[in-house]
Image (cartoon, rainbow over all chains, first blue to last red):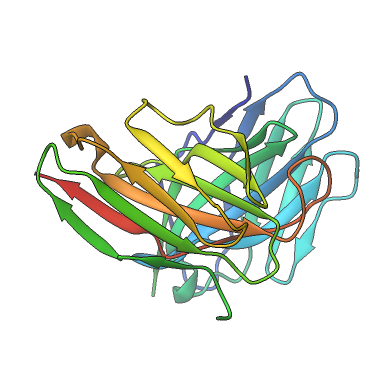
Length: 112
Length: 117
C-alpha cells in the first residue's frame, strides 16, 4: 500500500520569504503522479502543483516549485515570496491506478 | 455550476440516525470520488465512480456506508445508523478523466461537515 508522510505538522514563514514543505512517500510502483493541494480555512481544496513521476524536470507554477527526488521518494514544495494568502493547510498527495492517498498535512502560517 | 457543489454544508445527526450527503460534480466529469476528512487529518479515500459504475469502494469503513451515482452525475453518500466516529468532513471530488493514467485534476467540493451527537 502507498503511504504519504508529511513530517512537519506546522510551519511558519515571514511574508516575502521562502519556505519548503516536506513530503515523502512509499511505493513500489514506477508510474504515478504527485500533487500538492492547498486547503484554506473553511474553504475548498485546490490544486497547487502536480508532478508526473516519469518526468525528471521539477514542476514549477509561478511562486511554487517542487523538488522531486524519485530515488529518495521525496517530493517537497517550495513557496517563494510568501504571501499572506498562502496561509493554509497543505496536503501532499500520491496518485496511481489504485487511487489518491493524502498525507496528514502541514499547516502554514505567514507572518506579516 | 462552475464547480463541485455539496449539500448540506453542515449536518448534525443524533447517533443512530441515517444521513444522506449529496454531491453535484462538474458537468461532464466522468470520475467522482468521496473522501472522509477527520479533524486535523488529510482526506481518506472512501469510494470512486466512473460514470454510474462504482469501481472501487475499498475505503468505505463499514457496511453502514453506501454510495450511489445512478445516472452518472449526482452522487449520494448515505450513512446508516450514524456513530460518533462518523463525525468528519465528507469531501466529494470530480475529475474529467479516468483514475488510471493521466494527470486529470480532481476538483473538490466544499465538503459536508457531519457532527454526530
